[in-house]
Image 1 (cartoon, rainbow, N blue to C red):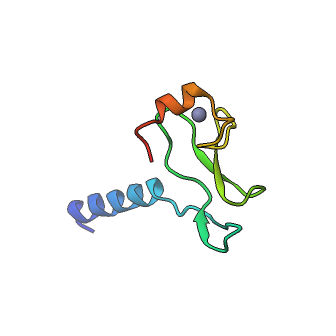
Image 2 (cartoon, rainbow, N blue to C red):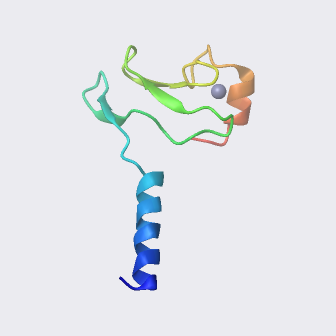
Image 3 (spheres, helix red, strand yellow):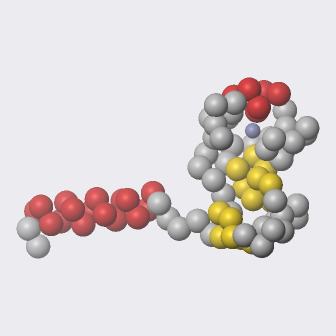
Length: 82
Ligand SMILES: [Zn+2]
């Protein structure tokens, strides 16, 4: 393997690590959704709440995103994130 090939292979491997397949869960609506979403500006990762079945929960403040229980701080920091 040439140096160039080795470099490309290493890059491909790193890419795979960064984009490890996200487990899929079924929502109450029957759709398959990602078990987690990319990390938010507040530092929390939205994890799909399989108890509710249709919402994501911030793993830092444990509030359902977009719910009344979500802290203002979390809402404010994540305001520009979908
Ligand atoms: Zn949060």
